[in-house]
Amino acid sequence: MTSVVQDRYGPAPEGLLHTAEVDVPAVGVDEVLVRTRASSVDRGTWHIMSGLPYPIRLAGFGARRPKYANPGRALAGTVEAVGAAVTGFAPGDEVYGTGTSTFAELAVAPADQLATKPTNLSFDQAAAVPVSGLTALQAVRDHGRVRAGQKVLVVGASGGVGTFAVQIAKASGAAVTGVCSTGKVGMVRALGVDAVVDYTRGDFDGAGPFDVVLDIGGNAPLSRLRRALAPRGRLVIVGGETDGRWLGGSDRQLRAKALSPFVRQHLGTFVASENAADLEILRDLVESGKVIPVVDRTYPLADVVAAIRHLLDGRARGKVVVTVPDDARPVTLRSTP
Image (cartoon, rainbow, N blue to C red; front, top):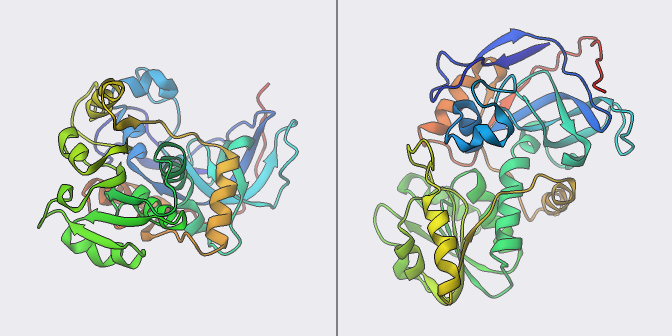
């Protein structure tokens, strides 16, 4: 099968990722082999590709060299085969979710990280949902605990996670303010926000106080985020990027968690859980029209380097999707014990 491959870690996709013919991955007893029709790119793609910050290598992605063929995680496609213990899926089913090395014609995914694809989405649109949609759902519902009537600020509203967070918060009945750059104001406004703050022209901390602040991929100082927050509000730091090889922007999260027990505001962060139950909730939100994936651009599998570069350069409005040719070549299945 055709797959994107990398044999070393590196911060830039150029000269690192390329396509090659590789063996079909082995399928475990509780896994599903998916014929990938589309995948997507997010900041996690870069972290897995680069092996930075270093702790990600110890989290199961390979200490010295990449453990997996490529950094793809999200997928949408059709079931090719199932492991012996899998009962919820059958060949031909259209699914979406998360797996390993998904920038490929075929990819393996744990059965408990897959769900039936939303019927009103194309494969390209569905592939935009799993990683970013799951993160946004859990940020809004579990950690922000957003309720109807609350005021919510989403910093980074134009990104992959942000576009989902804005819509999920609105579906929860909140009044939502989105923060983005000038060129992305129109897109964020079209998501249904109640107000937009262009961070190049004004400060968001003066627009509060907010019951919930979701900081997604920003680098605003913790003190500034707290000024925008109500006295008993909840701050959820979803991301933050720096060049640090050990912390990589997570120092704000660590300081927030350390400070939280000593102040009235709840300050925290989290690591998203990839699970089928939340994929089913997202499917319901999508099929009801409450959430619509925002796809900025699509790139063919052979241009995955350009897809990742587009994200790294900060030009993406919503999600960047990688499409996979529908080449239904016969496969020789392998199983793991």
